[in-house]
Image (spheres, rainbow, N blue to C red):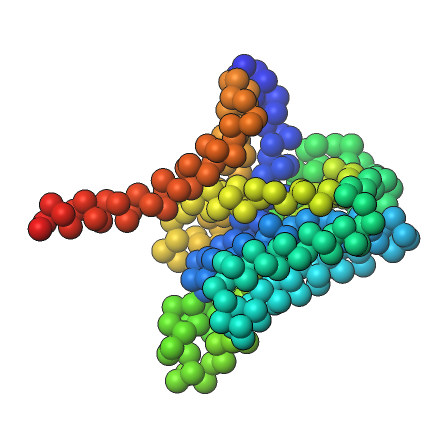
Length: 296
């Protein structure tokens, strides 16, 4: 069993690096803006389905990937606008937008799933060897994730990033500082879902197919990765907060692989992941209540 797990480590590492984009995407609204967002369940497959559709009709892979990122940004912006102008909670707004995106995916692809030939992918445009060499994929995805992390750290320390963090920390104080909170909420949701759509576009080009259901459960997995990363790295500084989702994603998917290698049934993964997230989020509240009861 352990030998099976060891053999799966490189494959799982590639998977975890790709899905770390989703964990990073969840972190932005959840931690920075203090507004949970479920749009990733729709923007992740949107990026994948859109890139599959436009690649198969002849658009080059670079433009296709960029188009997927823009589509993800617009999906996030739509959720933010629904939340802000219709006074609907961000969770419900995300559910509504993600539900509508499912129909968009079907309309874009014209079918529930679509295959993408390897020679059409952005990886083949760089080098055909990438899709044939697992270690080369680890190097490419690792470098890409590192680049995204560095860009996010620089962004968070910029004037715009500081304003975004200010909105999340105290939205009522923002107008006194000359910050339009609505613009930054839209920007934060847009950036988050652009990252999720990028992850979906990369998955489709790496695996060679897109499916409208590919986003099912992706948010819970990403949230579990975020929580694990924060437990290990912490989030006392901006650098730690941004690095945590990546570290958590790597560890989470290795734990999943270990569970499967030791005989865990795949159908139990969603339940266990959801239970882990529920316990982790609810434990501080339950502990606080128990202490207050004892104190009383």
